[in-house]
Image (cartoon, one colour):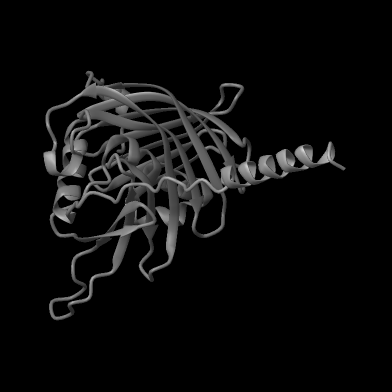
Length: 277
Protein backbone atom coordinates (compact mmCIF):
# COMPACT_ATOMS: atom_id res chain seq x y z
CA UNK A 1 0.00 0.00 0.00
CA UNK A 2 2.85 2.40 0.79
CA UNK A 3 4.36 1.85 -2.69
CA UNK A 4 1.01 2.34 -4.45
CA UNK A 5 0.26 5.70 -2.77
CA UNK A 6 2.76 7.88 -4.74
CA UNK A 7 1.61 6.34 -8.03
CA UNK A 8 -2.04 6.99 -7.19
CA UNK A 9 -1.27 10.61 -6.27
CA UNK A 10 0.63 11.23 -9.52
CA UNK A 11 -2.16 9.67 -11.56
CA UNK A 12 -4.78 11.87 -9.92
CA UNK A 13 -2.62 14.98 -10.48
CA UNK A 14 -2.16 14.12 -14.16
CA UNK A 15 -5.90 13.63 -14.64
CA UNK A 16 -6.62 16.95 -12.96
CA UNK A 17 -4.04 18.75 -15.14
CA UNK A 18 -5.33 17.29 -18.40
CA UNK A 19 -8.93 18.03 -17.45
CA UNK A 20 -8.09 21.67 -16.87
CA UNK A 21 -6.37 21.82 -20.27
CA UNK A 22 -9.61 20.80 -21.96
CA UNK A 23 -11.36 23.90 -20.68
CA UNK A 24 -9.02 26.56 -22.04
CA UNK A 25 -11.16 29.63 -22.76
CA UNK A 26 -11.74 30.28 -26.46
CA UNK A 27 -10.55 33.51 -28.02
CA UNK A 28 -13.58 35.50 -29.10
CA UNK A 29 -13.52 37.32 -32.41
CA UNK A 30 -13.16 41.08 -32.06
CA UNK A 31 -16.32 43.10 -32.64
CA UNK A 32 -17.07 44.31 -36.14
CA UNK A 33 -15.93 47.77 -37.10
CA UNK A 34 -18.63 50.36 -37.52
CA UNK A 35 -19.57 50.56 -41.18
CA UNK A 36 -22.44 52.60 -42.59
CA UNK A 37 -24.81 51.66 -45.39
CA UNK A 38 -23.44 54.59 -47.41
CA UNK A 39 -19.88 53.24 -47.13
CA UNK A 40 -20.92 49.76 -48.29
CA UNK A 41 -22.92 51.28 -51.14
CA UNK A 42 -19.94 53.33 -52.29
CA UNK A 43 -17.69 50.28 -51.99
CA UNK A 44 -19.96 48.29 -54.33
CA UNK A 45 -20.05 51.14 -56.85
CA UNK A 46 -16.28 51.44 -56.93
CA UNK A 47 -15.85 47.69 -57.41
CA UNK A 48 -18.34 47.88 -60.26
CA UNK A 49 -16.46 50.79 -61.86
CA UNK A 50 -13.12 48.97 -61.52
CA UNK A 51 -14.05 46.52 -64.30
CA UNK A 52 -14.69 47.93 -67.76
CA UNK A 53 -14.54 44.61 -69.55
CA UNK A 54 -13.98 40.96 -68.71
CA UNK A 55 -13.67 37.65 -70.48
CA UNK A 56 -13.12 34.32 -68.81
CA UNK A 57 -13.51 30.56 -68.92
CA UNK A 58 -15.53 28.57 -66.44
CA UNK A 59 -16.98 25.15 -65.76
CA UNK A 60 -20.34 24.54 -64.13
CA UNK A 61 -21.96 21.59 -62.42
CA UNK A 62 -25.72 21.79 -62.83
CA UNK A 63 -28.37 19.79 -60.95
CA UNK A 64 -32.13 19.75 -61.15
CA UNK A 65 -32.96 19.37 -64.82
CA UNK A 66 -32.07 22.86 -66.08
CA UNK A 67 -30.09 21.27 -68.88
CA UNK A 68 -31.77 18.35 -70.69
CA UNK A 69 -28.54 17.00 -72.15
CA UNK A 70 -25.61 17.67 -69.84
CA UNK A 71 -25.11 18.21 -66.11
CA UNK A 72 -21.62 19.63 -66.66
CA UNK A 73 -20.99 22.68 -68.79
CA UNK A 74 -17.82 24.28 -70.07
CA UNK A 75 -18.37 27.92 -70.81
CA UNK A 76 -17.09 31.37 -71.63
CA UNK A 77 -18.23 34.80 -70.46
CA UNK A 78 -17.78 38.17 -72.17
CA UNK A 79 -18.71 41.49 -70.61
CA UNK A 80 -18.34 45.15 -71.55
CA UNK A 81 -19.69 48.14 -69.69
CA UNK A 82 -22.30 49.28 -69.24
CA UNK A 83 -24.48 46.18 -69.76
CA UNK A 84 -23.33 44.02 -72.66
CA UNK A 85 -23.03 40.39 -71.50
CA UNK A 86 -22.64 37.10 -73.33
CA UNK A 87 -22.59 33.58 -71.89
CA UNK A 88 -21.77 30.54 -74.03
CA UNK A 89 -22.03 26.97 -72.82
CA UNK A 90 -20.71 23.74 -74.31
CA UNK A 91 -21.14 20.08 -73.47
CA UNK A 92 -18.04 18.12 -72.34
CA UNK A 93 -17.83 16.84 -75.95
CA UNK A 94 -17.58 20.38 -77.30
CA UNK A 95 -21.09 20.75 -78.71
CA UNK A 96 -22.57 24.21 -78.23
CA UNK A 97 -25.38 23.99 -75.68
CA UNK A 98 -26.55 27.60 -75.46
CA UNK A 99 -25.61 31.13 -76.47
CA UNK A 100 -27.10 33.86 -74.31
CA UNK A 101 -26.70 37.58 -75.08
CA UNK A 102 -28.17 40.56 -73.25
CA UNK A 103 -27.82 44.34 -73.49
CA UNK A 104 -30.01 47.40 -72.91
CA UNK A 105 -32.88 45.41 -71.41
CA UNK A 106 -33.06 42.96 -74.34
CA UNK A 107 -31.91 39.36 -74.61
CA UNK A 108 -31.40 36.60 -77.15
CA UNK A 109 -31.10 32.93 -76.24
CA UNK A 110 -30.05 30.49 -78.95
CA UNK A 111 -30.25 26.72 -78.36
CA UNK A 112 -28.37 25.06 -81.24
CA UNK A 113 -29.07 21.46 -80.20
CA UNK A 114 -32.81 22.13 -80.10
CA UNK A 115 -32.86 24.43 -83.11
CA UNK A 116 -34.70 27.14 -81.13
CA UNK A 117 -34.10 30.84 -80.55
CA UNK A 118 -35.83 33.11 -78.03
CA UNK A 119 -35.54 36.88 -78.03
CA UNK A 120 -37.25 39.86 -76.45
CA UNK A 121 -37.17 41.90 -73.27
CA UNK A 122 -35.38 40.46 -70.26
CA UNK A 123 -38.58 40.75 -68.23
CA UNK A 124 -40.17 38.18 -70.56
CA UNK A 125 -37.45 35.55 -70.17
CA UNK A 126 -39.67 33.44 -67.88
CA UNK A 127 -41.61 32.31 -70.97
CA UNK A 128 -38.54 30.69 -72.56
CA UNK A 129 -38.40 27.55 -70.38
CA UNK A 130 -35.82 26.04 -68.07
CA UNK A 131 -32.78 27.09 -70.06
CA UNK A 132 -33.93 30.69 -69.87
CA UNK A 133 -34.24 30.25 -66.11
CA UNK A 134 -30.72 28.82 -66.07
CA UNK A 135 -29.49 31.82 -68.06
CA UNK A 136 -31.12 34.29 -65.65
CA UNK A 137 -29.61 32.56 -62.61
CA UNK A 138 -26.23 32.53 -64.36
CA UNK A 139 -26.47 36.30 -64.96
CA UNK A 140 -27.08 36.88 -61.25
CA UNK A 141 -24.18 34.63 -60.29
CA UNK A 142 -21.76 36.24 -62.75
CA UNK A 143 -22.82 39.65 -61.44
CA UNK A 144 -20.89 38.85 -58.27
CA UNK A 145 -17.74 38.55 -60.38
CA UNK A 146 -18.36 41.62 -62.52
CA UNK A 147 -19.38 43.79 -59.58
CA UNK A 148 -22.72 44.61 -61.23
CA UNK A 149 -24.57 43.93 -57.97
CA UNK A 150 -24.02 47.55 -56.97
CA UNK A 151 -26.85 49.72 -55.64
CA UNK A 152 -28.75 51.92 -58.10
CA UNK A 153 -29.71 55.52 -57.36
CA UNK A 154 -33.39 54.82 -56.72
CA UNK A 155 -32.78 51.90 -54.33
CA UNK A 156 -32.52 52.29 -50.57
CA UNK A 157 -30.42 50.21 -48.18
CA UNK A 158 -30.14 49.35 -44.50
CA UNK A 159 -27.16 47.69 -42.79
CA UNK A 160 -27.25 45.45 -39.71
CA UNK A 161 -24.74 43.17 -38.02
CA UNK A 162 -25.63 39.49 -38.06
CA UNK A 163 -23.53 36.51 -36.93
CA UNK A 164 -20.20 38.30 -37.29
CA UNK A 165 -21.03 39.72 -40.72
CA UNK A 166 -22.58 42.83 -42.20
CA UNK A 167 -25.98 42.36 -43.82
CA UNK A 168 -27.09 44.94 -46.36
CA UNK A 169 -30.83 44.90 -47.14
CA UNK A 170 -31.69 46.45 -50.51
CA UNK A 171 -35.14 47.87 -51.28
CA UNK A 172 -36.57 48.97 -54.61
CA UNK A 173 -38.12 52.35 -55.28
CA UNK A 174 -41.51 53.04 -53.70
CA UNK A 175 -44.39 51.20 -55.38
CA UNK A 176 -46.75 53.98 -56.42
CA UNK A 177 -46.81 57.73 -56.00
CA UNK A 178 -48.58 57.69 -52.62
CA UNK A 179 -47.40 54.33 -51.23
CA UNK A 180 -44.32 54.50 -48.99
CA UNK A 181 -43.74 50.74 -49.20
CA UNK A 182 -40.53 49.56 -50.78
CA UNK A 183 -40.28 45.83 -51.60
CA UNK A 184 -37.03 44.12 -50.69
CA UNK A 185 -35.23 42.94 -53.79
CA UNK A 186 -31.84 41.76 -52.52
CA UNK A 187 -29.83 41.00 -49.41
CA UNK A 188 -26.02 40.97 -49.32
CA UNK A 189 -23.68 39.66 -46.63
CA UNK A 190 -20.19 41.14 -46.25
CA UNK A 191 -17.43 39.43 -44.27
CA UNK A 192 -14.85 41.27 -42.15
CA UNK A 193 -12.82 42.01 -45.28
CA UNK A 194 -15.91 43.72 -46.74
CA UNK A 195 -16.20 41.13 -49.49
CA UNK A 196 -19.68 40.00 -50.55
CA UNK A 197 -19.82 36.33 -49.56
CA UNK A 198 -23.56 35.73 -49.95
CA UNK A 199 -26.43 37.28 -51.86
CA UNK A 200 -30.18 36.62 -51.89
CA UNK A 201 -32.48 37.71 -54.70
CA UNK A 202 -36.15 38.25 -53.87
CA UNK A 203 -39.21 37.92 -56.08
CA UNK A 204 -42.11 40.39 -56.32
CA UNK A 205 -44.02 38.64 -53.52
CA UNK A 206 -41.05 38.58 -51.16
CA UNK A 207 -40.05 34.98 -51.90
CA UNK A 208 -36.37 34.10 -52.34
CA UNK A 209 -35.63 33.62 -56.02
CA UNK A 210 -32.02 32.51 -55.53
CA UNK A 211 -29.31 32.24 -52.89
CA UNK A 212 -25.72 32.69 -54.08
CA UNK A 213 -22.54 31.89 -52.14
CA UNK A 214 -19.23 33.47 -53.22
CA UNK A 215 -15.91 31.84 -52.33
CA UNK A 216 -12.24 31.51 -53.32
CA UNK A 217 -11.55 35.24 -53.61
CA UNK A 218 -8.40 36.23 -55.49
CA UNK A 219 -6.95 39.68 -56.25
CA UNK A 220 -6.89 40.70 -59.88
CA UNK A 221 -5.14 44.06 -59.63
CA UNK A 222 -4.42 46.84 -57.18
CA UNK A 223 -6.81 49.77 -57.16
CA UNK A 224 -6.87 53.13 -55.46
CA UNK A 225 -8.06 53.85 -51.96
CA UNK A 226 -11.71 52.96 -51.37
CA UNK A 227 -12.52 54.20 -47.89
CA UNK A 228 -10.30 54.32 -44.84
CA UNK A 229 -13.35 54.09 -42.58
CA UNK A 230 -14.67 51.02 -44.40
CA UNK A 231 -11.46 49.08 -45.01
CA UNK A 232 -9.26 49.99 -42.04
CA UNK A 233 -5.56 49.30 -42.57
CA UNK A 234 -5.90 46.30 -44.89
CA UNK A 235 -4.42 46.37 -48.38
CA UNK A 236 -6.99 47.58 -50.89
CA UNK A 237 -7.06 45.23 -53.85
CA UNK A 238 -9.59 44.15 -56.43
CA UNK A 239 -10.86 40.75 -55.30
CA UNK A 240 -13.23 38.53 -57.25
CA UNK A 241 -14.74 35.14 -56.34
CA UNK A 242 -13.52 32.25 -58.47
CA UNK A 243 -16.11 29.86 -57.05
CA UNK A 244 -19.85 30.48 -56.99
CA UNK A 245 -22.60 28.22 -55.63
CA UNK A 246 -26.25 28.97 -56.38
CA UNK A 247 -29.50 27.45 -55.11
CA UNK A 248 -32.67 28.14 -57.06
CA UNK A 249 -35.31 29.51 -54.67
CA UNK A 250 -38.03 27.79 -56.70
CA UNK A 251 -36.50 24.42 -55.94
CA UNK A 252 -35.73 23.69 -59.58
CA UNK A 253 -32.03 23.01 -59.10
CA UNK A 254 -28.61 24.29 -58.23
CA UNK A 255 -25.32 25.07 -59.89
CA UNK A 256 -21.68 25.45 -58.95
CA UNK A 257 -19.51 27.64 -61.16
CA UNK A 258 -15.71 27.58 -61.05
CA UNK A 259 -13.71 30.11 -63.05
CA UNK A 260 -10.42 28.89 -64.52
CA UNK A 261 -9.18 32.22 -65.77
CA UNK A 262 -10.28 35.85 -66.06
CA UNK A 263 -8.91 38.66 -68.20
CA UNK A 264 -10.19 42.08 -67.26
CA UNK A 265 -10.04 45.58 -68.77
CA UNK A 266 -8.86 44.33 -72.12
CA UNK A 267 -10.27 45.12 -75.53
CA UNK A 268 -13.24 42.92 -76.46
CA UNK A 269 -14.32 42.61 -80.06
CA UNK A 270 -17.92 43.37 -80.96
CA UNK A 271 -18.33 39.92 -82.48
CA UNK A 272 -17.33 38.35 -79.16
CA UNK A 273 -20.34 40.01 -77.53
CA UNK A 274 -22.76 38.55 -80.08
CA UNK A 275 -25.84 40.19 -81.56
CA UNK A 276 -29.32 40.51 -80.14
CA UNK A 277 -31.13 41.47 -83.35
